[in-house]
Image 1 (cartoon, rainbow, N blue to C red):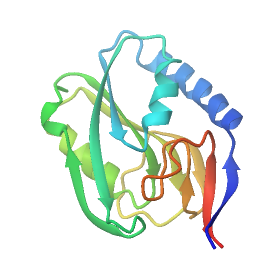
Image 2: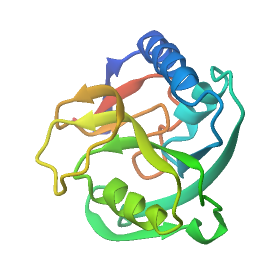
Image 3: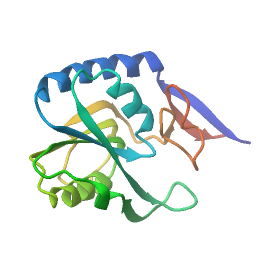
Length: 174
């Protein structure tokens, strides 16, 4: 039998939360030199919807982080690509990522970006899992907190599938 998808967070709840966070970001970053660093591929839907709600100038950059092996469920060695192309010195940086679970990826990325001496680094995640974290670092903005579930949709994938779903779904094997 194949996978079974169960709706967890629908498109309208995501849209409402993005409106709320965009309003907050518009105030916080007004008059600042903002660089949004999108973590590919998982944050693509969130960033696409978020930037259309921002009423301030920003630069969009990206990095690609990968820590999952070919099976898609087991953590492997963290690889971060694209940092060398960024120019963050004396700028305000907002990292946007899909999910915060162990905290290893985001905390490592923040440490690496701090080497470029930005004025400020904050992070925004779509989801934060209610699990033990491997780091003291926590995202500055969390759209939704969830239990320890394997989820897909709205940018999140299982072996590169299901990213385009408009909501977030629990992926279960029957």
